[in-house]
Image (tube, rainbow, N blue to C red; front, side):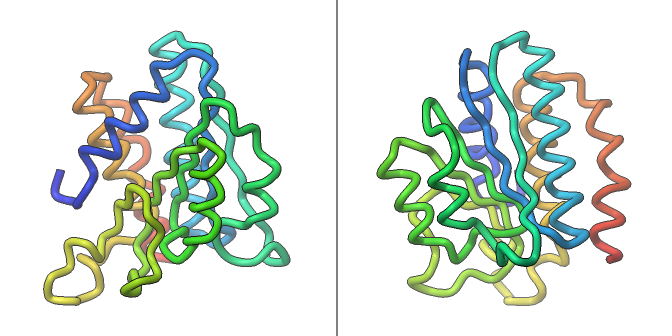
Length: 180
């Protein structure tokens, strides 16, 4: 739990994982880091939904370059907002307007990112970002977006006593994202 807000992020995700008819949306990015972060978050949450035997839905969206970078307002308007959680991976740290829209429509938002937040530009929601721990302002501990997503999932697995051995299969995706 060395990342700021990782404990709170795990609790928020667990709330939706253990709620029937919840909608969990993962919004990724089109680069290698974003694709791997999306895979880690999506696959781990699908496994947990199956393990908890709840009727929760897990979806992901990987935008194409024409959609632009980061959480898009068009996508936010298109999702089913009933009992919903949106998790961004490798993006979202600058998307104030989109987060405000989601919250105004009853959707909770968790941002997991590794890009540097700008003062006054960050959304008002739960954020796990490596830069929040980077007191020396040195490359945010070297973490990519997939590593941040992995740390959130690893904490979730550990905190809620899910078989932690399953998390090891995601390490390769963190490595690929880090290298690329």
